[in-house]
Each structure stands twice: as C-alpha cells, then as structure tokens.
Image 1 (cartoon, rainbow, N blue to C red):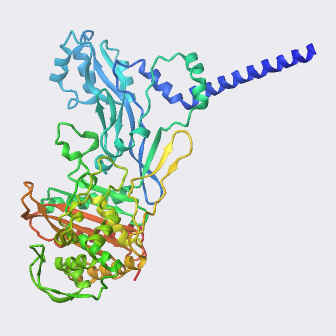
Image 2: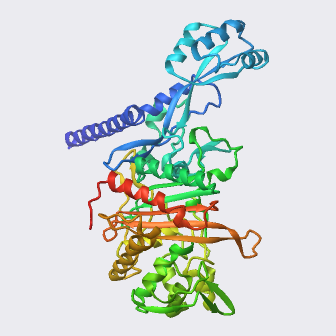
Image 3: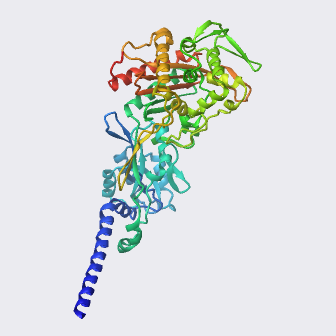
Length: 573
C-alpha cells in the first residue's frame, strides 16, 4: 500500500515538473521566437535618448491585378545624429566630418554652429534618418559630444499615391496614432503595444502564465487593400489633368467592381505627399471628399430614376410624353437645361438628351411614396459603411416631403446631396443585376498570430429586377453610341454604358443656386452586360465649360481604354 502511494507521489511530482518545464519552454519560445524582434527593439531603446519615438506598426499593402503585393505603408529605421554642446569641444572638426559625410547643403554651417554654442543644452539634433553605415562612420570619428541615436518612422513608398485613402499617423497627445484614411480606420490592428525596455527576463517568463495560456489570439495585423497601384496611378494622372485644365476647385474619382464592391482606385486632386505633410497646411487638403463631403450630383441620377420607372412598371423605353421644355409643380417651374421643348419624345430620348421634364414625368408616375422607397432601398438614406473614417450622411430630407416638386428635382439630382461613395454604390445596382453592394478598400487582414481574415463580397438587398438592370444598361449603351458627343466616343468592340451630369452648386448663403458654378459628374460601366468596372468622376466648379460632356468624357474614355487593355477585357460585340 505504501509502495503504491509512493509510486503515485513520484508520478505526480514527475507530471508537475513536466508541466512546469512545458510552461518554461512555451514562454522561452514566446520570448525568443514570437517576440524576438520586439525584445531586440527594446534592447535598442536602452541605448537611445529619453522620449525617443521608437514604435512598431503593421504594414499596408496595395494589390496588383496578378495578386502581388506592393508596400503602401511600413516602418523604416535609421539614426538621428545629435550633438551635446556641453561636451563638444572639437566643433570645427565635427562640422567638417559631417559635411564630408552628408554634404554642405544638408548640414548648414550657421545652423550647426548656433546649436553648438548652446553650452547649457545637452542635446541638439543636426541630422535625421542617417543610415546604419553613416552611424558607424560617425562612431569611427570618435569625437566627444557627437552622437547617434536609433529612430523609426512611418514610410510611404508611393509618396502621394492614394494619400487620401492611406492616410497617415501623427501625434495625438503623446501618442502616435492613425489620423486619416486606413491608418485611422484600422488603428486597432495596425498599432502595436509598447512594452518597457527594462523587463526582467525571468519575470517575463513567469508572469501572467494563466493569462497567456488562456488569452485570445493577438489582434495585431497587416492589411492588404483592393487598391491596384497601376490603376490608381492612372486615375490620379487623369484627375490632375482635369483639375488643371479646367481650374477646378477639386476633382475626384472612384473605380469599383460593381459586383463585388472592391475599389480598385479612388483619388482626389489636389493631393499631398504623405511623407512630407505639415499640419500647418490647410487641413482641408487631408479631407477625402469622396467619403466626407456631399454634393448635388445632377443628371447621373436620371439613370436611377429611369430604372425606378422601369422596375415599377410605369414606363417602357418606348413610353412617350410631351416635352414642353418646362413643367409647373406646386407653384414652382422646372425646365430642361436649355429650356427648349422637344415635343413628343420617348424615354430613350429622355436619357439621350438629359431632359429634366422627362424624369420628373417618371417620378410623378411612380408616385412620391414609391419613389422615396426606391431611393431609400438604393441606400441613399444611410451610410455605405465603407472602411474609411468620417463618412458623411447624405442629405435626403426632401424625399420625405409630400410635395411633388421635391421628388421632381431629386429625380434629376438636385435638392438631395450625396457622397460620391454612396452614389457609386447606388449606381452599381444598375450594372450588377439590381443588387446593393458594400464598397470596401481592404480585402484581407493578416493577423500576426492565427488565420487571416478575408473580406468576402457581400450581395446586399435586391433593389431592381434583373430585367430592369439589363434594360437600363441597354439604354445607357445607346446614350454612348448615339448621343454622347454625337457617338464619337463609342467603342466598336466594347459595349459601354454611361451618363453625364451637370448640377448647379448651391449658394453658401442658402439663397438658391449660383448661375455660373457647376458640379460636373460622369459615370459609366463596362462590359455593359457583364460589368467588371464602374467609373465615377466629378469635378467641382470647373472653368470654361458648362457641361460635363466637355470636361469628363475624354478622361472617362481614356480610363476605359486603359482598363480594357490593362486587364485584357475581351470584346463583347
């Protein structure tokens, strides 16, 4: 009996030792392998100046059409060169050596000697972001009071590319945090928790064993975006060209897959270099107006109105009405853009000639309640939920009115104000068979530990019948083939559906609309009946041209041809 009891105790002791050994091995593995880079970084910190900004952060990637990844944001490291004026006696020698190493245009003589004269100051920076080789050479100089300190910084290899989408980090109080774009939206997974540089090794091994064994997988991650760098670059070139040619206040554009919601490119011009931004600049330069601003979108909304009429079975493409050039509703008069009467015209001509009276006719036949319900089903009364910060709410209160005039003006894109991203989501329902999509920028979140999270396309609620989507696409193809600049931009081998828009800009004092300021818009998708790309362009207050057909048709056509060639889109007619 005693022998059995002794044997049990020996086995129990063995298993206890084995368990402790297992915990030690696990913790050593975690310290040396999983967290090895972090502890090496912390070791570096012990040789840096107080308040040094050493930090870790996850990377952001672009995705090429072939699935390769290109860095959009990552951590870079180097050294800050500093002097201790109270200890630096060989000032002239130090200056000469630094000029030999970095150049006189970088190390200014007057500035250097002024800093060296501050004998009560133990620390003055003279050069930042030196390489490891540079830091080693400074050490070889062996000049007392000349020092190097390890530093890290956020680096954006593409400089200004997708600046409004990527965003940047900056100080918020004492902490560096994402302030705009994806850097802010995904702060929770991109940021890395800092630890003290003076953690006791054995305390680290034995601390929080219970928490470690029972903790959930870390949420720290890198993110992979849907942004295709070649497409993004091409879009930004076109936006810059539009803005400069017509001296617009700003110009924006989005290229999206209307079936999946993946955004291949989005940009705003003027833009900024993320590596060189300064907060003393006008902060409005950092605003992503594609998400954060709303506009009265004008006649591109007519495509939605015609689709609503088709889906509600109140019109056919061949339905006619008498266009008198104007229409009176609730004591108000609305007119076509030129005030000219066309007589009896069908719905195709309403789109071809962009007739305000024609879409007002449709909205009236649909009825206020049904028209409002369709517009709300298109998501115009809600935010899209795009994974970017500060998304603005659309201004659609006029659709709740009982009067016909508000619905008539909304039918051609005035009196309601929408974000460009909400607009492109609604327009995608015309192209994709009638469904609402979820626009998104990130396609994959790659956690440091555990499986990646892959963003799957979400097919939202159905807004239009598939037949409606096909019919409106057919009508919009005819707009391009017959009406847009006289059919001169039609592609013989590729069916493209498109519509322009020109909207008056509301006065800032609330007193109606400016008579000489316009928002020009343009949207189009292709291949028209199996769409892979939908492009939305807009330019705010362009000079020299009244109509969007003369400002945005050419860049849309250029982008379309580029995408067809780059993605090798096969002919569909």
